[in-house]
Length: 233
Ligand SMILES: Cc1cc2nc3c(=O)[nH]c(=O)nc-3n(C[C@H](O)[C@H](O)[C@H](O)COP(=O)(O)OP(=O)(O)OC[C@H]3O[C@@H](n4cnc5c(N)ncnc54)[C@H](O)[C@@H]3O)c2cc1C
Image (cartoon, rainbow, N blue to C red; front, side, top):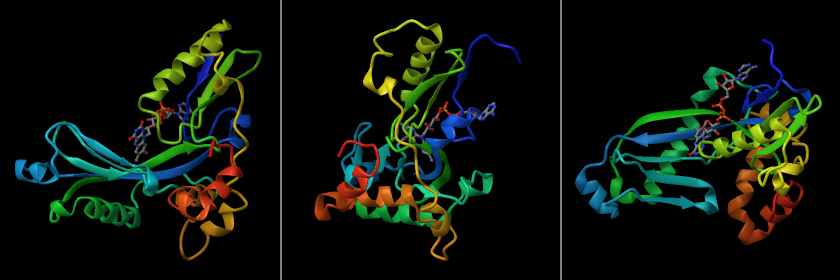
C-alpha cells in the first residue's frame, strides 16, 4: 500500500510504530449482559428510562440499555504474560463470576435474572489512562492510542485530532495539552511478568492500579500508587 499520509489506530494490537510499544499495554476487560428485564423487574429497581449507575469507587458500570437488559462490567484489567493477545483470552469465567457478584450485590431485587451474553476483549491502557497522540516520519504518520477502554465516543475525537495532525495545520484540538505530550512509559514488566506466572493468576501493574482505586480514599494506597504513574490524583 502506498500513501502520502498514514493514520495508525491499532488500539490494543501490536503497534506498527515501535515507539508506541513503550506506552501501551494490552489488558483484558469483561462484560456481562442480562436477558431482558420484565416490567416487574424494572419497576423493582426503579428504572423507567435509560438510567445507569457508574460505581466509580470500584470502576464498575451497570447500565440499563434501551432493550431493557442490564449489564455489568468494566472492572477487571487482566494482563497476560508477554502482552498476550489471543482469542481464547476473551473468555474468562473467573471475571464473569466476579461481575455477576457485583451485579447482584448492586441489584439484589434482580436475584434469579440470568446473563445471556458474556464477553471480553483487549483494551490499550497507558499510564495516563486516556488517549494520547503523536506523529512520526516528519508528520506523515500520526497515531492515537491508550484509550484504556473508553473509546466508543472518544475514538471519533481521536480521529479528528489525527486528521488535524496529518494536515499539518494547528487547530484548537492540536493546541490541547493532552495532544502535546506523551504519557510516561508503561511499566507492566518486570512487575507483570513474574506475577502473571503465579498460581494465583495474572495480577499486575494494571490490575494493581484498578485495585488501588477503591482503597484510595481509605488508606492512601491508591494515591501513592497513582503518583507513580502519570495520572491526576
Ligand atoms: C469488554 C469491553 C468493554 C468495553 N466497554 C466500553 C464502554 O463501555 N465504553 C467505551 O467507550 N468503550 C468500551 N470499550 C472500548 C471500546 O470498545 C474501544 O475503545 C474501541 O472499540 C476502540 O476503537 P478503535 O477503533 O480504537 O480500535 P478497534 O475497534 O480495536 O480497531 C482497531 C483495528 O485495527 C486493526 N489492526 C490492528 N493491527 C493492525 C495491523 N497491523 N494492520 C491492519 N489493521 C490492524 C484491527 O483489526 C482492528 O480492526 C470496551 C472494550 C471491551 C473489550
